[in-house]
Length: 230
Image 1 (cartoon, helix red, strand yellow):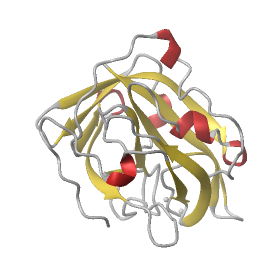
Image 2 (cartoon, rainbow, N blue to C red):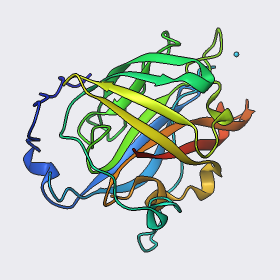
Image 3 (tube, rainbow, N blue to C red):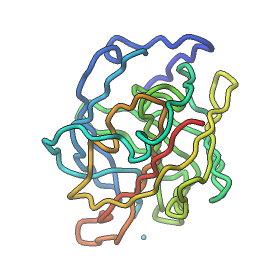
């Protein structure tokens, strides 16, 4: 697991790779299987019966960047927060109250999944945007494990207007409102729409969805909740 990032209280200190446009190969884990997701553009201007896990599983696409969420163009930009590690995710509607763990991309280009033996744990891509910063923060969680339902088992029940919050290491709480909750087939995953940078502070909550295919030991779809800072 990657070392934890520093968390300045007032001014973000982005690492060199976050200060210019770069490409990161996203690989995520679903039902214990590593699946190549796509090439994710992270552009910083200012700044798993089998375990199921977070995420988008889709081949890379060569399409033009699209808006990160359909609601982005219909609202004024929200005030953003400085960089700080998330410490706890609270989603009252679906009784989520879970701590965070860092997720990193390993030497083979795979995005690590949260430990499958902990059903109440979410992960965030720690070298990406932190929840509350300008851009798209990625939060992933298991929908189930070999033994029981997991932290994001109820994620499909979120609807536009629902609220959740992320407690941060700087003592602040970032509050978000859901714009949409959408399910995508893994072989047609809209990479740019989900992962592309945004002009305001947004979050993507991601988990597996659809039917569990025992042949390939993977779910057919991914559920993505789009939300913005309020």
